[in-house]
Length: 220
Image (cartoon, rainbow, N blue to C red):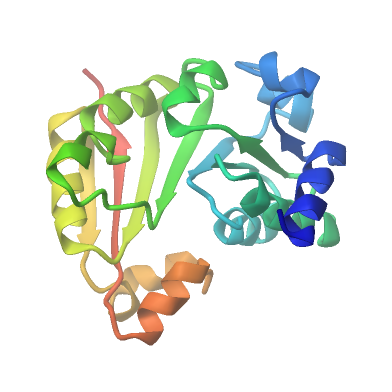
């Protein structure tokens, strides 16, 4: 294992803004993020598959009145976001090390106000379609943790995954879907505050258009 990874794993172990296995809050935080971690009543925004935390930290800088949680299974990735947040002295940021399928172990019903999904793996093989982050089984989990009219955002460069997501969201309890297939040429670009993930920067430099959608949890 490289020295960088060893440093990052040790950083996560020692840092209060990283929740991972072995830490007391990791197993007891469900339904209590505001009370036990943020110690305020502000809305909660989560980023699924946050990678290095560029979006989580970027949004937290712009919206100090909101609480942000970046979620990823890779400890060496979230350590980088954790370090950025600490260097910027951001107290409205946390990072959670877990898999997407375990969301309900960490968030209670109606605990989350917004969800961001930024450049997820498009899972291109037929056998992998059920693992897409906008598959029906995941959307069911998102609906459970989102408040009524809670917002879901999605950014991707992949056309097939984007089309799949639009259809899946419409069939599985989300409404008011607003779509652009070229974010940086649309009026919605201003909403993104110039924040880019590492992969987004790579894709845009190569000339790929960025797809974006925004929708709401619909009432049944």
